[in-house]
Length: 445
Image 1 (cartoon, one colour):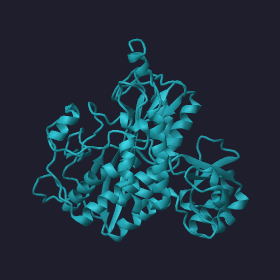
Image 2 (image 1 turned 30 degrees about the vertical axis):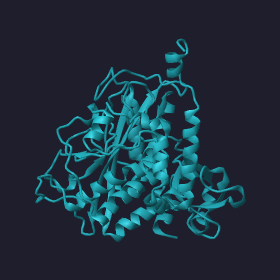
Image 3 (image 1 turned 180 degrees about the vertical axis):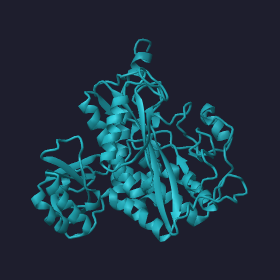
Image 4 (image 1 turned 120 degrees about the horizontal axis):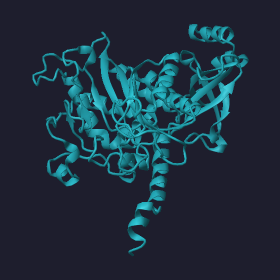
């Protein structure tokens, strides 16, 4: 057994762990799990635990349903919201076929491929996400708990204790938090995770979303990561702060001699150019639902043009400038992703697009500084020469379907599955009659 596996076995005995939950995600990023007895762990480490893959969205057909889950001992954590006696722990798993080969539908495999690509180029990828969400009184309607706004305190902020308990639970699970606060919308909140390597962060985001929901349920309320749950209010994003470090531990995005004065290296500029070029192709992964595109409509802070700027929060890519001379703080911020995405696939796509920009030495256009792009119409954007993100799920799906870069990254299994499912979702949505249509047209037509 490895040292990590030995640690798990010792901790289980010392902490009275009676259930170990194996965690993994389906293709859409929904958490899946089954519980294993501690007596089965040693075998599971060596041989995996079998389960029916045909029950998991995007996995396998009934005739090829046998799958194996191999737990990663380095992800072992005790769940702090469960009882201390007969306690419960979790480990994330990789999925393999009965022949021991990596399963083509495993999202972690896709991200591992992107991480390996970065390593072969001499980089480690770090990501720090800002994950927004709403609290509602229940799951039946979006009734907020308060009508506070950005950085409000009690009594306008009703979620102080909810966020406190959430942060404590995350830290108990080894996930450090940088910030937590009330966001702009009513009962909208944000918890920012401290940056780490991209694979660990994908695991952390999955854990974070579950912890937020579990703590909310303990308080008798409902937490939602729906991108745009309330008409006329801001949507929830998951801004990604991204940096590359080289093999010597230097920030590959930092260059104090940058002639533009931005302290950005040429590597960073190539990376940004890759994001801007391929954002329409990976939009289906960063914004994967019909509802996602109701957040990206303009008139708000959420971007919809293929632009970048230094302090401009209306651009797709922003360069945070809190400490411009600090090499460790140099990073780029991608602002279109939302928290409903599958973080493994979304992170993999973003990393791959940026690395492609470096490989191809893509030229970066001038920044869009000093312009509030949220106030420009689509027509004004096009007249100014700005490219656009897809305007809806249907457009995003068709662009994604034609993307060779995304097909090469994901493989035929996941790529084809997503195209098929998202075409179905879009066509079903087009056939729905909304309350907006009824209230506007029923009486007069």
